[in-house]
Length: 259
Image (cartoon, rainbow, N blue to C red; front, side, top):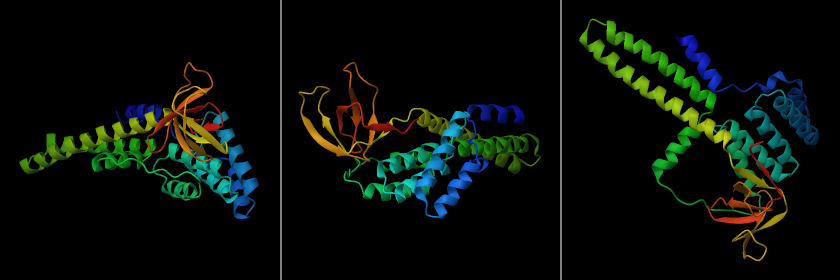
């Protein structure tokens, strides 16, 4: 039973190939430590391309290290993109989140996110605190605990132990359900990530997808956007800014986080 469950979960949530398996990563690390950030960035990018061509998911650490190499060269838009990709793989990567905040503080555009209820923020942060693989691992521990405590409930002779086993088995089952649910949410977010980073020096945001519409804002390189699918009006893309204002811009000059 346990073997089949593990197989099912691994098929549902494939694991990330460790970056240490690629000699290119070791070379990139050496170049970074030597201060050759341009070579390090090139080698990290090559490692990422190799993993993707092999059908594997590059690790969060590779994207994080690439972001660091780009940041040291003051290539801020590409650094933002790399940190966002690191967080896409592992939303709990606090180093990538911290460095992303540092890079954003050096950008031209600064946005104030809208306020939201504490419970919503707490729940979102809790879900993002662990990767798909970590939540999957927790679900395995919870399901093992469920079987153990269920056995205690069924076979213990003392009533106190049976009550304890019943309570703990119920909690373990609840924990398993939540962990699987959080893993599914993380997996959905990974495959439906609509973030993008502006690479052009600047872009105008319009109220509608026509050249005659009014431009109400100019955004600059490194700005993070949520981009929708291209509309019937060719050459325009619907965007949502970090402060949740919406508008339209020319469908060019940006790169999506989801590769």
